[in-house]
Image 1: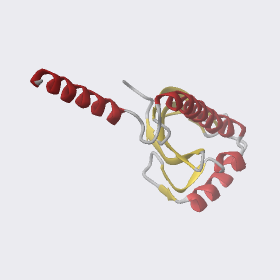
Image 2: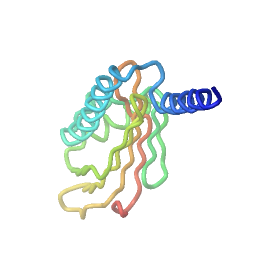
Image 3: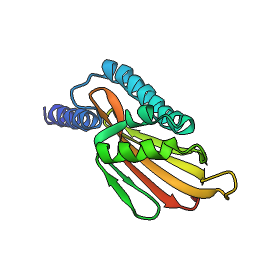
Length: 161
């Protein structure tokens, strides 16, 4: 009887530990399906971030911004909120001279709640200028079924690891 009780307690403990690792409110069957959808959506949002930058598509880029977005540039200047950030992006993207690369170094995702991408980037202000290396970290959140940029942080120099 004592051995049976110990086995039941151990089984309950294992089940509790497993439950903590599983997303709240999801079954194993639905987790894999929603997990794939979240991963696909996140990958798509990262690519939309890249492509709208390459195309200088301010409307498309600004559609990715969360209402409470913050942007910190390599020089420390900061934009707070979607309205301020979107206005800056519109002006920046209107300049035909600059180019920028965005090479994905790493992505990570926490379920369907948040994701992060690290870009190694070169920003060239004009064809006559030398490229400026940047490390850019972008944090996305999932809100209303969409992946949105919550924070964008630029740092001088390329990504090193």
